[in-house]
Amino acid sequence: MWQLYQFPLCPFSRKVRLVLGEKGVGYEPVRESPWARRDEFLDMNPAGQVPVMADDRGVVLIDSVAICEFFEETVSKAALLNGTAADRAEIRRLVSWFDNQFFRDITGPLLNERMIKRIVHRATPDSGALREAMKAAVAHLDYIDFLLDHRTWLGGATMSLADLAAAAQISVADYLGGIDWKSHEQAKRWYVGMKSRPSFRPLLAERMEGINPPPDYEKLDL
Amino acid sequence: MWQLYQFPLCPFSRKVRLVLGEKGVGYEPVRESPWARRDEFLDMNPAGQVPVMADDRGVVLIDSVAICEFFEETVSKAALLNGTAADRAEIRRLVSWFDNQFFRDITGPLLNERMIKRIVHRATPDSGALREAMKAAVAHLDYIDFLLDHRTWLGGATMSLADLAAAAQISVADYLGGIDWKSHEQAKRWYVGMKSRPSFRPLLAERMEGINPPPDYEKLDL
Image: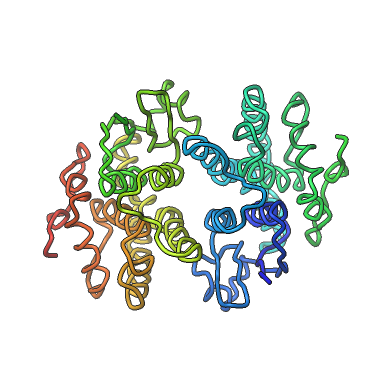
């Protein structure tokens, strides 16, 4: 049985959990708070970040990109990188877009202002930084609308790792009150579809202690 | 023929160029300065970053991770992700380590202080930030020594994408005066081996206008 080191609002752990859910891979979640910099965890992953996965035979998988590629290579069910090499490159481009640009502009600042400041620094959020993140979210939802003008799913004709990477980031941003769906009908319809997947339901039911999501967070009829 | 949008000191473009060199894929370098935010380039890549590759048939590849995976999938010569799925996960972990942690701690700050400030802001570098980057470089070289205590190459028994990702970042940090090899004999021997590869020689011969590397930058006997 795999163990998955993670915390409920980590978007990269959520991406991995969606992959594991789609592929039907069982795992036991292990709560890890990377900001605590626990010695045993740093020994396992010098980067100090979740997600990390470990199995009974001593295999340790580190970094969400490496973990997703590992399960794509070893579990054929629910292929998440379909198509030609160029199609796969486009899916990986979008995974990187959501892992890096969306995280840098939106999820990262929201986690910093609304979670890290509360838990670690006992400080109040910077309203300017929150405003910037919410403004960036509008631009990112515009881009998702644009992609869906041309495609059924974000990465192409089939549901792919791009949709899971995007939904993982958006779900954390949504939990932290950073997403306003107004005038983003296409993106909203796509996201409601993602939320209704069996792989997604367990994530939406979890809570981070002391931080409550907005009332619509779990709803399927936004 | 592929076109590769890049600038001489971009560590991610260097990683891709090393992959192309090892695999014997021809390309024409196209100079792109991402900080200029050229409209036509942003239309091609909304993330605004190099490397980007484009061919005559309209295929566009974006993001260094996606580009490296594309050529690993399509060109069998010089396999760079060898071994079992777990071995491949370890190689990808290290690629991410150098692309993200090494870049965040060392190459990114050095590029900002010694290139962007000079070219864009016409400002002098912050000596505190440079000191921090050089301190971080010592810790990263220690980690490379540690890896080489246990392995012939950084990612395992064969030369892999991990070695190319590491050498790409280190070569830019070295160009910018951020690397001191003192008491890092193993890392130095490995890096001299990387520098002597035919894929690496053309990169070392290039210069970024107005910024000169230290005298030992191209030398094979450090």
